[in-house]
Image (tube, rainbow, N blue to C red; front, side):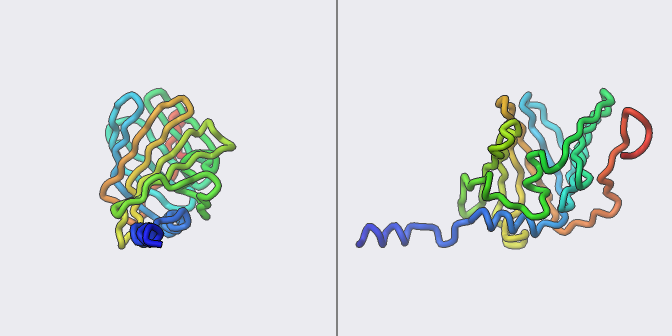
Length: 192
């Protein structure tokens, strides 16, 4: 009886569940943040990120002629230096986890760390192994939606390439006036 009682006492009072993480994501209707991205090659890029759920995101790089933007349906990576645009449906990218209208993490995510300071989940879509694994980090902050503030993520692609994104100066409910979830197509003039 005593060993069982000791286990009950040692168990955390309130473990974070995937439903808690999903509620935090759903409660995030808009967000702005600064980001630092470290690529598989060690190259570090910085910039500004804006998110408007569902489906809209913009990563504006400070010193690189690149842009990653989601307009609600399509995620576009624009490389202005080589005048190239790559596009995917948002729902078929790893960022769908952050951008879905109704986040349902249970089919492909699990909690990998739950400490008094934060939570980390690892998500992998078994139907799309080419997406690799996305590990998303949250910091426990009472004022954030659901008490979990998005801190960043690490993407590990199917070939073993690793990209790490860290967020700072995160502002929830941020005004997105003037933020365009479109891009100027370098292959021709004009917004897209």
